[in-house]
Image: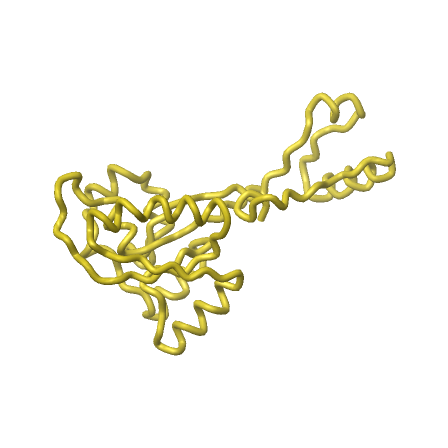
Length: 192
């Protein structure tokens, strides 16, 4: 039942994360970032950008959308992709990389520094056919089922071991007059 929704980003953010702490060369220019962030998540992203922009001279233009897949696919097909796309997982990254729509990061990031900062598993998720195309900057666990153990045990429920067990338990909880599921809507990244 584990499903990890991950965010990938490329070039500018990877460079910022992997750059030496000394005075970097001021690059200047503008980098466009396409993502789904809003609210506190977007505020945190913008707060992170300030020191990056000050150090590098790069201006980051954020474009937010709730329909990332459609907007990104349309822009790529039109030849107007963003410089950085924050993707919800490695599947779309692999698809775009294999279609030749992404620039590998191997020549612009310090591979040794990346190995120091990231576990190999995370680097593997951003790697397609032996080339690094993405850097994970955030993960969210969206496929977990949480429960109140004391209330669960007091009601006589046991932890399901299979999907069918979970479905039967859901029916039983509902038959007992309880609400078997809730959906957290405060944060999209926390609730899917």
